[in-house]
Length: 424
Ligand code: GLC
Ligand code: MG
Image (cartoon, rainbow, N blue to C red; front, side, top):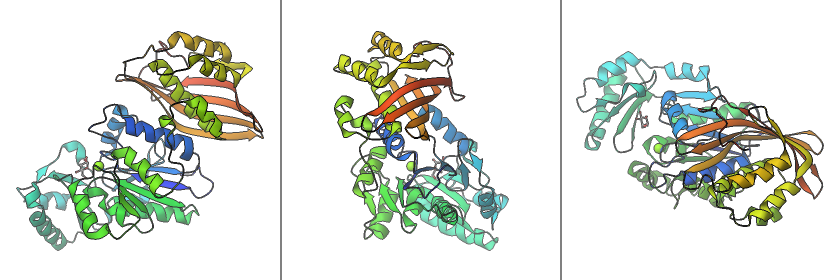
């Protein structure tokens, strides 16, 4: 959160499973990849991305390995009982203290074990401030009422949340996704960085609280669960700041950005011809990079029409003395690298090949000179690689950006560190 010097333009707080990440009807992650390009292109530099998930950290890390998820600025895990910041996921110790208030895990364990209706979820889901069960939907009301009564008698203040028509979580009363968001907003406000707009996004029961926080926009994705829609019908219908999107998962989030007019809503992934799009003249070096790697993905998938015009345009925007440094350390001229692309046209056709950029950050080092840093991911089938890429651009008024140098190094997150088929 420290990287922004002024209040974020937009803060998105999104659930992961079945909201940001589609588990049905989208095995190519199309909607997530659309969101990713939009975020990196238009929002990363001045906005905040927060993921708020029911998953514990370990299960969140597993999902990151399986899906093309961006790196969030803040990650709220275990149904709002843990808050961590940045790439290294540094836990918020103050939040831990708040979670300890009127909470005793041992007592919760003891009391819940007296309910035969409750079946413990896997060990990986049990956390210091979250006990999770499965329960038959028809038993929820009765069990919840009784459990609240018994735990109150034992001096605890807890919260019970029912999600996905089957999961029941017991948390400290001060926990939950909504309370975690309220805490974050307060923290940002204290630092003079209250977001200009906040959009919360969810699909199930544990997301309900997000929609109750004052002054936020909300989107329930089209595939939202019954329990969230029921809550909306009873409590949210008059609130014009909440919509039930007509699109699924991450595409529903993009829909809401457009609906509430929160900023650009056009994902560069939806552009069919980047040459035509050049006319739009988006004046951001980060945009150049996002668009280039989308082009590169299409190139290797063999989906570019008008190849010669593209390579000519790329060459025209690369400095004649520009250098590309491959992660292996080998150096080549930028223009030769573009020429070599020809050999690889369509080599990843039908191979589930995807490229996405993460944490695109541009800095103007001297007037007219920009350094753009990003993580560039490539995935073929289930194998993926990441490298940190640094691009130096210069710009002249009304003449767009010139690629000066490109340097890549293997990223720690890379699974595979060979050089086969790695071009740019
Ligand atoms: C996630 C968690 C699970 C929890 C559920 C509902 O799926 O992994 O433990 O019960 O969210 O909050
Ligand atoms: Mg969900």
